[in-house]
Image 1 (cartoon, rainbow, N blue to C red):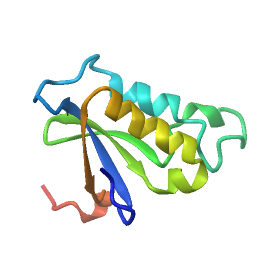
Image 2 (spheres, helix red, strand yellow; image 1 turned 180 degrees about the vertical axis):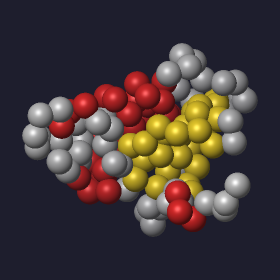
Image 3 (tube, rainbow, N blue to C red; image 1 turned 90 degrees about the vertical axis):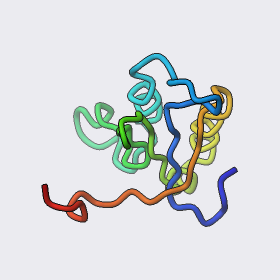
Image 4 (tube, rainbow, N blue to C red; image 1 turned 90 degrees about the horizontal axis):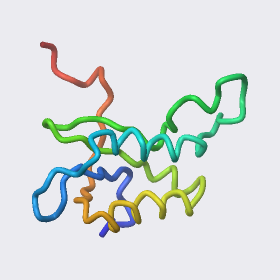
Length: 108
């Protein structure tokens, strides 16, 4: 369940039973399917060749995941429903969190 005030949800590549979700490139595939839902998707050549800023594949603590921003829902509720439906249909863990900008990361 996603609360109404969540700004971002993380769809984790692990099922509720603890299994790693396959195929290994599922996060990139999901982000690719949702790449047309982009505020600048129609601008310029190659505009369709980038991920949506609202659906970002990443890895958190060694687990593949997709970060879905609530702005996607405001842009197109069907796309939001598709992303969360994908997680639900595949029994994936969904958690609310906040994606921090890179500059907020501690120095290494």
